[in-house]
Amino acid sequence: MSGTSMDGLDCGLFKISLTSDFQLNWECINFTTISYSTDIRESICKALVGDEALIDAVDRKLGKEYSLITEQFIKGRNIDLIATHGQTIAHDDGVSTRQIGDVQYLKKIFQVPIISNFRQADIKVGGNGAPLMPFLDWLLFKEYDRNVITLNIGGVANITYIPKSGIRSEVLGFDTGPGMALIDESCQLFFEESFDRDGVHAAIGKVNQEILKELMAHDFIQRMPPKSTGRQEFGRDMVKQIIQRFPRISPDDLIRTFCAFTAKSIAENLNKHLNFTASDCSLFISGGGVYHPVLMEDIRNSTKISNIKTSAEIGIHPDMKESLLIAVLGVAKLEEIPANMPSETGAKEMVVLGDVL
Image (tube, rainbow, N blue to C red; front, side, top):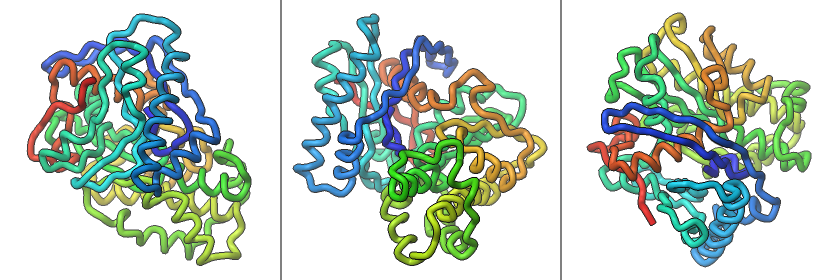
């Protein structure tokens, strides 16, 4: 999995059983994240705004990189299939989606089924093609004894709500807005650091209320779900636009303000679109955001939910969850099990996701 943080490839080796009545058993044999080189990350950034010829070139370049990383990760172990999400470079809800990372290179090396293109089938039946995570969240928590909200904080933030009933059609999930993208982009721009390690910049900054108010008025934050977003809305361009409008803002104050924005946009979406009481709900957080203490404290203060845990407390490493999702989707494809969630994506029907090479 290569997500909106665009910082590396999450590689998971899993043993998975998924039955037609949606009973999931899984075991993680190995997991790691292989960081991208500066060259690869800049190539991805160029593809976000590049023409077709450039995108095709980066598609091949990234496909080769995936195959090299995967070979390094697998180390000759026997595998039955590879599922790969690819790097999203364009997504227009319900219209089109584009992931790059040419899978032919993986096929050539490993000679097993390579499963990719997980979003297109949902779009073909009227869905947004996103989010994908609610399927895994439903499998994991449908028999839990209380209402569950999962929050994944990658480049963007997305939530899933699984009611205590466990009924699939009552599950809700959508992107709430930025995750770490604005914070990371600011660190790269101001300090040539890939992220705000241990929240050191945010910790000494102050929230600029004028900027925060303007950010919270953003169309996406106020939009009704189903909805999904990416760096095209909450990325480098937004950071530059804010700096142009507020040239005297200090780097630390801007990073602190983006922390507050991320937390407040999450809380506003939870409170506006989900029917839950804080006392009868557990919030499980995964993704890179769990390592940012200032953001985590902002989320606690903004959501008012007392029972907040990281996914590590239920046996899922916070960095691992997205790669587990893609592995489960790969198995679902081979087993012909419908894996989209129409209540989240707006699709007219449940369909099997993915293409097999």
